[in-house]
Length: 214
Image 1: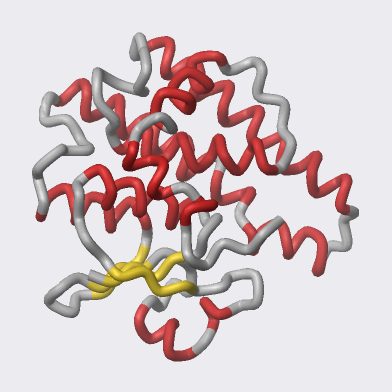
Image 2 (image 1 turned 180 degrees about the vertical axis):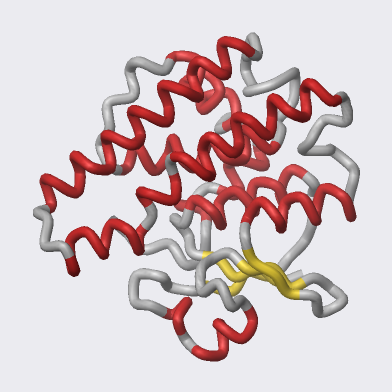
C-alpha cells in the first residue's frame, strides 16, 4: 500500500494512526499541501478531491477521504477493529468521530484559513480567533459526548477506536495553534493516554519523513 500524506495534515494523521494500530506496512509519499502539490494534475487524477490523504492499496485501488480509507482498512483488515460491532458503541464512536471530522476540521483546515486571509483579507489575529472559536464550539461538544460515553483513557471502551484516531490529530492541531484547552479534561486524558502508545507515537507529525521544522 501507498499513503499520500502530509506530516501535519490531521486527516492524513488519522489514517497513519489506523495503519499503525493495525500493524500494516505501507509506503509514504509526501504531498506538500503548503505549496499546492495536492493540486497537481497527476495527483488530482489519483485523487479527484485534491486533498490528502489518498491511499492506493496493493490491488491498485485508489481513493481519498480519511474516514472512507479507515472504514476500508477496518473491513479488509479486521484485526484490532476500530469500529465496535455492538450497535450502541459503534454509534457512539461514529458520533464522536463525525463531531470532529464534520464540525471542527472542515472550517479550520488549511484551504479555508488561506481563503480567509488571501481572499477575504482578514488579519492573522482574526484568523486565530476564527480557529479558536470553532475549536471551542467543537471540543465543548466532544467533551460532553465523552462524558456521556463514560470515557476513560480512550474515547469509548478500553482500546483505541476511530474516535481516538480523529480526536488526537485535532487536539494536536489545536495545541499547535495555541488554543486554550483547559476546559476539556476528558479529551486531555485521552490525548495523553493515546500518545503513550507506540502506534500513536509512530503516526505523529514529528515522526514523519516529510516533517518541516517549525
